[in-house]
Image (cartoon, rainbow, N blue to C red; front, side, top):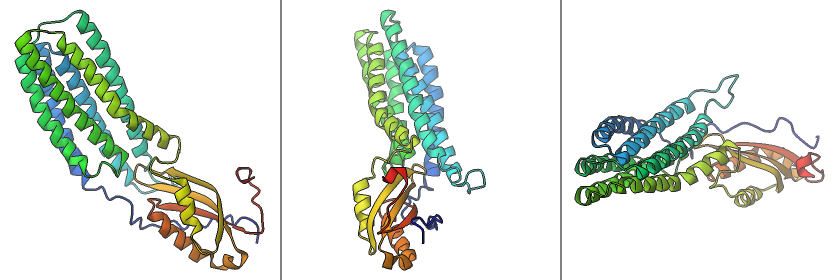
Length: 310
């Protein structure tokens, strides 16, 4: 037998028992899209009427949230599409692309908010603080409710985490607008509106930074943040007959599914049992949230010749 079995012992496990089941989130996304679309219209109209930059920038940010929720819903739908000759893993990776794109949308929105806030700070306009506060108060209720729809599943998927962050941040932002509206109503300090807009920008950046880093990591086929390579290798080494593991790669197929390839150094007498070894290893990996695995066996008395192994 040669040093490498180039059949690669694929045989992917098709049950994926440990992959998160997120089908119930379809309705959560749809409800969130409808509620926030209506609120964007109300908030934008109120912002124009009251000349409130805080309301207008928050409406713009809410509009980006609607787009983000719609994109995330589209990605979930695409991830269910069956694989074909052109896309042998299907369209699962669309969930990663969308999470990265959503983070970029937020950063662009922050740039716009900061620019407008600086301009308005230098040229403050008269603002109807009472109306501004009431509209933003409605925003707190809508954003908090939408965030609640995602809170249970926010740690299972990057797009769900993104949706939760969008809504939770918006609830906080709306609270800030309520406070500034009340201050303006009683003090007529109209520059407060610009200060709140700048604070909104900082809050959004802080809430989005981790989303951008995580999505960029997955986009670059980096090891998912929750994966510990040493722990994975130790788990593979527990399998009877496996004496070493190297040339190991772990990456994300989507925001909910991870994959692994590895060279397994196996005792010559255990090579006949390689099918059993594969099944044991796949079961172990599923408990580590890795649903697709590919192994290349090597005899313990032979040396891997691939550059990565030398």
